[in-house]
Length: 64
Image (tube, rainbow, N blue to C red; front, side):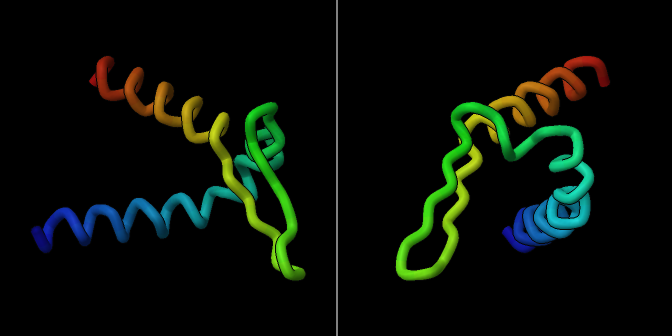
C-alpha cells in the first residue's frame, strides 16, 4: 500500500512539473476541458486532456 502511495505522489510531482510544457503544446485548451469560476476561484476540469494522456500512456506501455 505504501509503495502505491509513493508511486502516485511521484506521478503527481512529475505531472505538476510538465504541466507548463503540456500547456504550450495545447493540452488544457482542448474541447472537453472545462474552466469556470466559482466565488472568485477558477476550477479546471481537464476531461479531454486526461483521456488523451491516458491513451498515450497505454500506447507506451503496450510498446514496452
